[in-house]
Amino acid sequence: MNIRKAFLLKAVPAACALFAAGTVFAADRADLMGYVPGAEVMKVDVTDGRIDTISGIIYSQLPTQRSIRQLRMTVMTPRTKARKPAVVYFPGGGFTSADHEKFIEMRHALARAGFVVAAAEYRTVPVKFPALVEDGKAAVRYLRAHADEYGIDPERIGVIGDSAGGYLVQMLGATNGEKAFDKGDFTNVSSDVQAVCTIYGISDLTSIGEGLDPAQAKVHASPAVTEALLVHGPAFGKSPGGSIFSHRRQRAAVSHHARLGRPPREPDAERTSRSGSQEGRHRRRVRPRRGRRPRRSALVPEARHRACREILRKEAWQSRKGCR
Image (cartoon, rainbow, N blue to C red; front, side, top):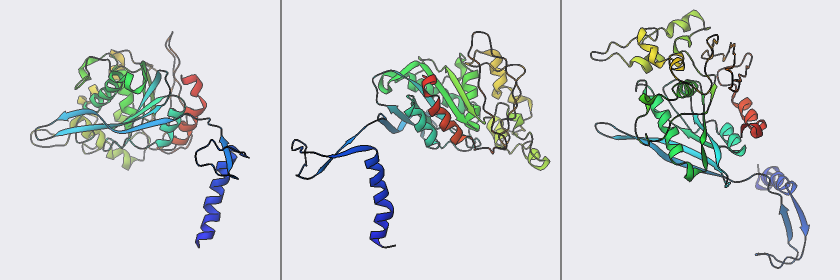
């Protein structure tokens, strides 16, 4: 492809889109910097505000015997003077990775809707539970402690996560008021959250293999599967490891903490879920608590595990007025 053809195919449509966004007119504007006689002056109507992005924020430092591990966060802030609600995104990754820079479409849609949007990494396997919950709470405390800096309303901080991140945000909501998980800096401020959104998240670590074929379900009974490593760690030295179905899993169960505390949306006794299955299926029966806003659940029939991203991006944009 020669240069001229490439220009016609790429540059010309881009220029047309730019001119369509504004008004072009001829005018004698000698007061404008760079103006020469005959130049066209274009007035562009700005409809979207500016969003500032700060990357590489160190929200927690975790000392070990030979090093200090730094946990990072990215914050997207709409440039307005008003205090804004904040949402913290925690990524999924099968408890083995926490790539917090993904889901950019959803995070940008939330920022355009008026939220301060943070995305935070957290510790994964082989580091055992409750490290990821401690990290999630540290991220919330960091934002609340720096609310003035980022223009956040400290009384309106919610969390959102997909898959393993969905499990983490459920734990953050269910452990509201529990101080045992508050470790590290800024423990003088609350780590409680006011809203939780789980995207095909796991509410019961023992049900991840539910609905799969027998061979795959058998894998999730193994002490080597990631959810078992999250709870028990690997078999090493005097530690025997263990299956996720052993009795030691209780402290890592969302339902256990929901009975103890007051999460923003308390799970109902009749609620059942298969949200951890790879097909992303859900079964829920919900009776909202009196005096609380009802929970919402979105079902995506026949959807695979990561099919909800575009749906949630549209939901965030379409419901922006109601979310404020």
